Image (tube, rainbow, N blue to C red; front, side):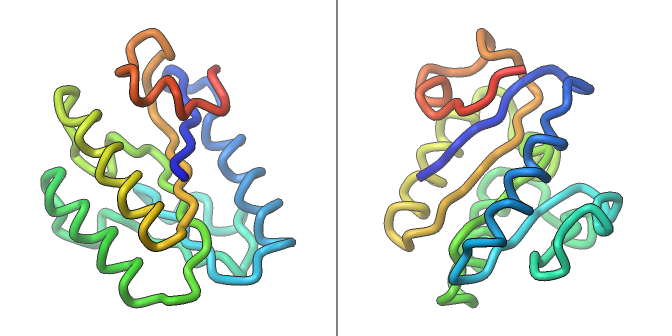
Length: 139
């Protein structure tokens, strides 16, 4: 299952994402991974959550990002949830690739039973239809 938290930059998406991940770790039976564009939120996350700083890796386009996600999923059979903060930034996805990326994440999520939560810096009205259906918070 893919879920989306959407809103313009500075509206509080990361705050919602951090609250969601810290709440999820309390009842998780498996592992949780949080991808971000920096180490900035390291102290706001539970120490049981694995923080991955995407700027440490040479991911430059949508396909490379999907390969990176598949690598994370493949190396951890106990992976339960994956949180992607600043999704469009960390994935280097262009506007015309959003639908394709969400469809791919949906396939990965369903096949490997991993919940994926995205933080997207766009208004609800600017999202493609496939993304609107997955919206859980609109700021």
